[in-house]
Image 1 (cartoon, one colour):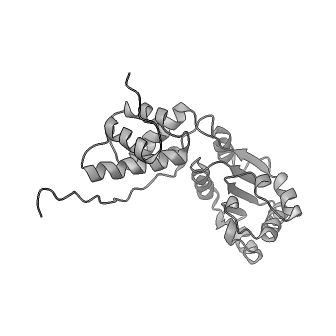
Image 2: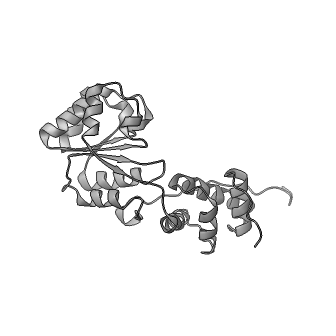
Image 3: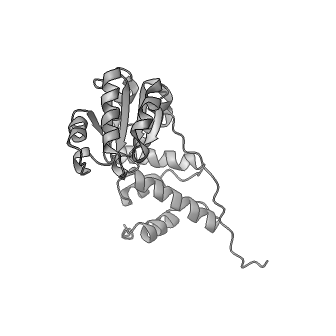
Length: 232
């Protein structure tokens, strides 16, 4: 092996923290976080968390599942035969209503059963039910009656705090001045923040050097379609 041999980039595992203490709140998600914290004092026994990819729906759902001992199922795998089993604890989490393949009759019966038993149901979706093209009128009616809580795009402060957390989750030390530099030039979403930090981690490991302003600029321009920053 000679000196020209490229360093191999080993993809080391990292463990994103999903506890309540690790959930960062701001104007974009404060209403949703407050509702989860108030459980079981909910104004409605069925709650729908709606927000774009990476907005914190899954993190909040995990917090609620842990606190409530809820049973969990993907919306696309729910069938009527599952309902009694899922309701054994009186709390049910249904993830990914927007992903398609939903047994609409089963979800309708689950919502009815939750209401009859005064149980609790938390549903997550990237889109509001009105945008999902549901074919069962009774289900559409039931979902219009549930409590919708929206998570939106983060403001500057929240996005920067999320970036710091994502770098910390991967045990990446960076110059603090890089965080506002990156946040100003990236898509304003938690999903983009997750993808960008992962790309920076991989690039830094492959190059065998820390994450610098130059590296961040290269990755932003190469992988995220942003224009190079103009010189001051």
